Image (cartoon, rainbow, N blue to C red; front, side, top):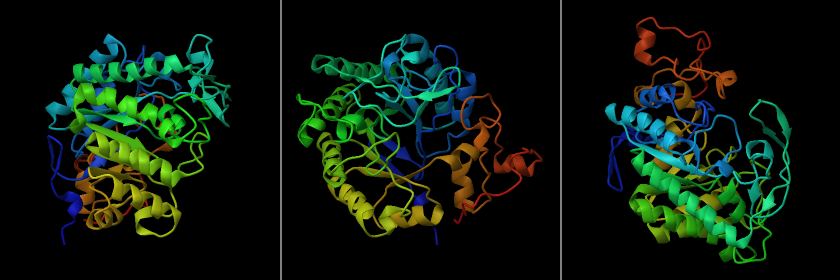
Length: 383
């Protein structure tokens, strides 16, 4: 029986041919000045068969950077670089959203001419940061943004959204997940402010509301998505009431009429919608709150993605590592073809190797080989 994973879907003004999206994947391969280059255009063009490509996280301002060679969307050169990417994707018949990003405290003064990273509160995250010299050093205590500075950061998101339009994207995704700046404002563990951006849940949601208002003012809500990670501890994150916090974050997205909410799901249970308990309650509650499309992301395969769509939980499913190693992933999933194994040693930094040289199924049949892809992954593709 055919899987609904391969049914068409209207997402705002976009007509998607199926429901296999590509998740945002940081690859640390921007050129000097954090500018996308021809290699990046090739990478995204190869994966243009995705229902929707969501770009790697892209900083909206210099202060938003916390990793080496991650692209920005705040300079003219970066806009021109991204234009090469969008032209390549559109020439191949694809659709691509830009993910708008600010890392907040997940950074280091080495990225900011000696100035401390900014955050909602001066709370040092546990862990280490990768410097431009590819050395791991401990995180620093960030500087808490002054009340009057927060609207300036909101305007950086607006400017990034405007530049994304100039670069030819089909829409944008607001990165509110994974312990970065918006997530830091949302969660009680990282937001201990006493002004209008902290304290009550309503105040902690204010930054998200203001960013969403600025971005939708540029794009209209039908071309804007929001990514959330309600239960992820990544980047030393915690919240006292995640059910309530992310219920209202999803409600904010619903109030604005956003095209989709993109949920990063924990590794266990897998996936939450298929199980019981706290995780399922949180994620099912978001589904009940948000009336737009829901994009699920959490180590899905064809069977679990099909189940999520059939149950009415997800409308699209975003694949990450599988798409990294399989440019033609939608075809492989639909036809039940073997899946290339991703080479973890080439995930970040580097050159074309492990980036643009993964073979499609057709290339493999024509004799193309790749020495790190001799085995098949545990991801079972069943059409």
